[in-house]
Amino acid sequence: EVELVESGGGLMQPGESLRLSCAASGFTVSGKYMNWVRQAPGKGLEWVSCIFGSGTTYYADSVKGRFTISSDNSINTVFLQVNSLSAEDTAVYYCATIKRGTTSFDIWGQGTRVTVSS
Amino acid sequence: DIRMTQSPSSVSASVGDRVTITCQASQVISSWLAWYQQKPGKAPKLLIHTASILESGVPSRFSGSGSGTDFTLTITNLQPEDFATYYCQQAHSFPLIFGGGTKVEIK
Image (cartoon, rainbow over all chains, first blue to last red; front, top):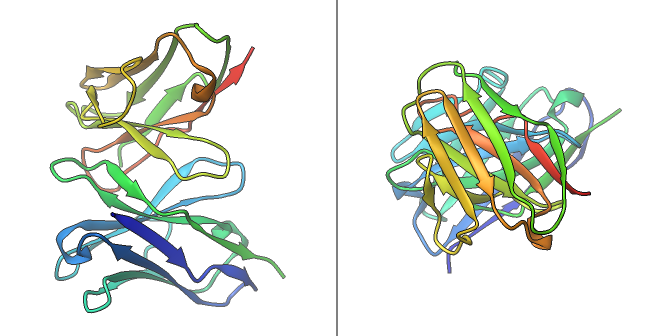
């Protein structure tokens, strides 16, 4: 069964860093475009970052320079390193794959919640 | 970046109604448009990709149309399980941008 499981969220203070994880099963992350999409409380969806294969990466302008996406193919997991957290980063962070032949998101995890508050 | 304008932001409808949601891209995106359904506390679910192709398992009362810059999601014979928030997403190029969402509420 194809599944994505996110972890690593929590209550953080402004300026802190954290690393989110997305463990995949049922497929290999190296063969898929793997993404992070976030959703602030009561707000819409915001694509954050994407990684493919050996390391091609893409970032939203809003996170460029602070977020780093990476993958460890040996454990079939994708990561999102988030630095210099601010209240604006408070959101549920979803991991999602891109459907082959499109740039739409077909498989989603359950999300991990990040709250930034002093 | 491509901007996506989705309307209306909310709509009230009854079971059995037909609901239409529109999405406009700020530039031509051919048919590279996807639609999602999201229920409270849940991850989004892909309904339609490439503007009009129904994802496997999605009921046929959902349909998508359009190309270029203007797109439509139509739900015919609205069912109780269809009350949710719907998002469009341009799938043309990075950054991948979502519309602001349309909440379909019970009248």
